[in-house]
Structure formats: structure tokens, C-alpha cells
Figure (spheres, rainbow, N blue to C red):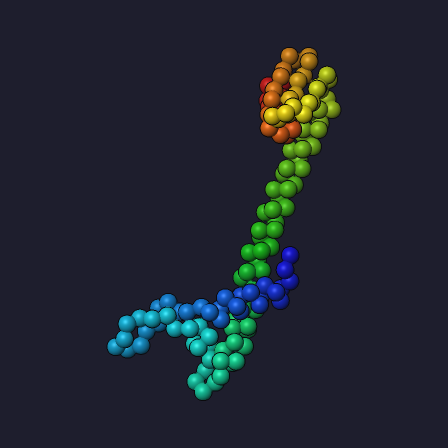
Length: 136
């Protein structure tokens, strides 16, 4: 994962080339005014605008983007925990079910439960176990 500083550098790079969409001068057609120029005060150099871009990028990152990243990480962790829970249920079912045969067939996984005369062919081991659990 990229560091905070690397992510801010990426934001600055995007902002450096960004043009404001709804800017116009009186009597002229609307045109995209460069953000870096808008952030450079009158009489200042472009370096000041770039410094402002850096400050703005850091604030955007700290107050908005970082929270989005954390939220996405939490959702991903929840999905992983849910899948681990489903895998635990699958293993519990296999542990409690007698005479289960799980075979790696050429086109998928074959599972059979001899006592129930169940036979299923699925693409993944998880799918095969889930199909057997639904029927059994």
C-alpha cells in the first residue's frame, strides 16, 4: 500500500493539471482556468500555486480521502471475515458428515455423500460443498 505522502504526491500531480470547469471572464466564453493559477495569488509565482496544491491535497487526504480508504478497508475485512465464517461452516459440515468423497475431476470438483446418495459436480470445492449442504 502506498504511504500517505505518495498518495498526496499523486493528488498534487492530478491537481497541477486540473482546470476549473465553470470559470469565465466577463464578455468571454467560459473556459477552464488552471487550478494552479487560481491558487497562485496576484504577483506570486507558480511555485506558490504548487505549494498551495500540496497543502490542499494534504487537507483533502486527511479530512476526506483517508476516511474513504479506512471505510473500504473495513468493508473488505468484513467480507473476509464472512468468507472465513462460511469456510468454517463448510468444514464443520464435512466433519459431521460421514462417507464424504471429494474428488478433483478434470472439469471441476465432485463431491458425493454415500449415505444420502448425493452426487454433485461444481467448479470449486466451496461450490461443491455448498451444493451438497443444500441437498443433504
